[in-house]
Length: 185
Ligand code: IMP
Image 1 (cartoon, rainbow, N blue to C red):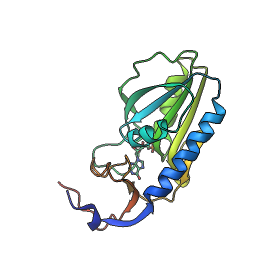
Image 2: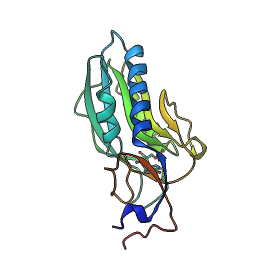
Image 3: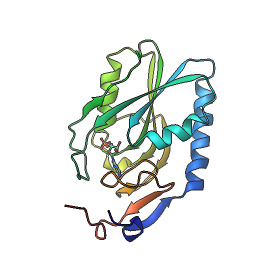
């Protein structure tokens, strides 16, 4: 894998701005769920970094669970609309207030599929918290109740988001210069 500095076009959201906004989202969630039971559900793998940082700001008592979805073919840069659950929740969500924690909403196919599936399990409420939202790419209408940042139509990486599975560890969100990025064959 190339050094990311060779294909980083520019830093879209730096570490300080990310952490500040995540603290604000946590405060909003605390206000809205005061006195209510809450279950946070992380959509693996992209949502994991965001989930861990967000949880530290959620002071209302809550439990967490994870599910994994596969929506992109290996190496693909756009959603296929083929969404599959590859790892399901370990908890029953019936009668519970569920908040999905997602890295990015792009076409909307992934979150739309997850919402439809989880709604059949009769949660008390079901909401979406997405760190990033590429609204202009939307193909299906989905609700985003808590939105970290609206971002332009560009391929981004870092802070949980990958480029061919690499660089999820970076503390910022960067834009990939697709002309400089050389995928391994
Ligand atoms: P959607 O189904 O098109 O909304 O895609 C959602 C999923 O695609 C996200 O959870 C990410 O895993 C992935 N994704 C979409 N855009 C990007 C991007 O710019 N960088 C990295 N992953 C992305």
